[in-house]
Length: 154
Image 1: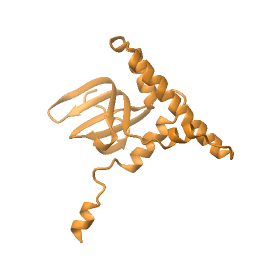
Image 2: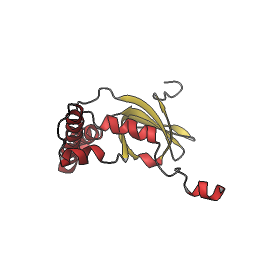
Image 3: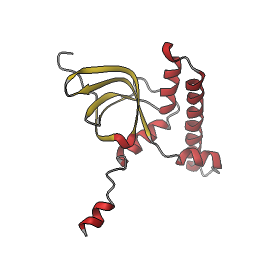
């Protein structure tokens, strides 16, 4: 019986609460300033930063001097369109309107990644590494807490 329960375990699945939280963030249609402070545990590292929508992350990457690239700009536009479609689907549903297939597809798309800005990565053996933008798989997050970490002495 225990073997059956263990084989049905959801340990490989992302935390459903965090996944819902990130999915709601990704559906926002306005840029988030500064974002929602969040700290994650990812493969033994602490990753701390501000949660922002996926489309905003791509837009900010496309604006960085070292990544001026049509790919990131195109991805930002595509992700923003998907966010707008999902938002429209929710609005139509709430007023009793008809939801299009494109809107429903955008609304039901699974959230697989999490996007942070002003990221600091803490490892057990050295000082925190700083990064401007960070993208990671939700299924790699083993724990999380609201708020950001501040290095001692900072």
